[in-house]
Amino acid sequence: MSLTKNPLGRSGLEVTEFCLGTMTFGNQTDEKTAHAQIEHAAAAGINFMDAAEMYPVNPVRAETVGRTEEILGNWFAKSGKRHEWILATKVSGAGLEAVRDGAPISPATMTEALEASLRRLQTDVIDLYQLHWPNRGSYAFRQQWGFAPETQDTAETRQHMADCLGWAAREVDRGTIRAMGLSNESAWGTMAWNRLAEAEGLPRMESVQNEYSLMYRMADTDLAEVLLHEEVGFLPYSPLAAGLLSGKYQDGSVPEGSRMAVDIAFGGDGGLGGRKTDRAFVAAAAYLQVARDFGHDPAQMAFAWSARRPFVTSSIFGATTLAQLDHALDAIDVTLSEECLAALDAVHRAHPFPF
Image 1 (cartoon, rainbow, N blue to C red):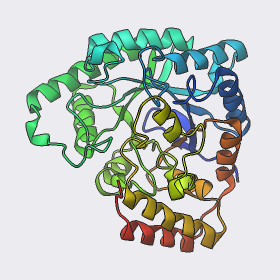
Image 2 (image 1 turned 180 degrees about the vertical axis):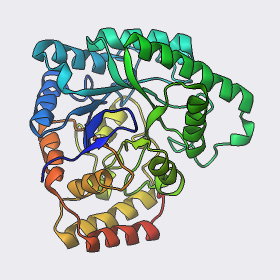
Image 3 (image 1 turned 180 degrees about the horizontal axis):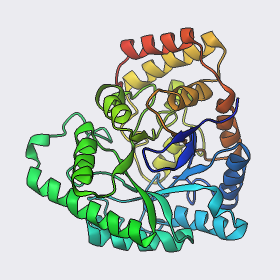
Image 4 (image 1 turned 30 degrees about the vertical axis):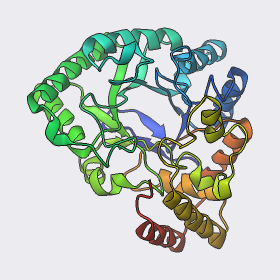
């Protein structure tokens, strides 16, 4: 099976249904391996990669902020193949102390972040520039249980959107950005950004990058209609639910070099960003059984499911090692039967939102 290309919103850009995620580059994944991953992904036909100024993660540290973009920039400079890739990166939002002391997104911080990203990436233009999370807060990152929209100031939020879209218009005119996107955003937020953009003749938000997997299907119930009817691209991240869907953490296992192990080594709780719950392991076991029943590798099943949902533009997958990447790339050739899809839906109904 060959890779499908999908339109990225109304931007005119076309991206492959799988996107190379880079958040481990510079931490769990060294530069040589990262460059090999880029080359293997390109050989498989992938034309889309996603980064962020705060990367690498697990954990985010002030001393490593920007290292991922530097690694990508070094590969672009060495290979001369920047033109072969649709390149996405992100500006960090409020509250992340490792980046600009946790300053919120504003035209001033976006200018600072963009110029730094362009230097690190050794490029003149970023194809998709995304706001990593909203200033007003988000349902993402396990915050859906306590997120309180009633505390927001509507006028302040709308003015912030207008200011950022005005900034985007200037950068698009300057040629440093081709398209804008959102991340960890809600259905209302996506509509609000684009209603304002349409009313004022400003660049619209062409995509939303949110968590989405067999174990976290929130987009099914809030974003799907917006994405389809408003022609906004959807870029799921964490399609393996931080590795839970691979089965590698079942029965108390903590593989050496895994996200959980690295987090523990740096003094974290190994909680996979709040995903490690008793219910999550029960749900993972049910999905693993579906994979066995239909003869699929569980990770490849999860990747294929994510990439081919009707409102998905490109599913972002990452890998620590080259072997893991090559294993993930085999998902390109995986086709899930209607019976398998029905079985996956049945597990979702039995184990909804386990974290």
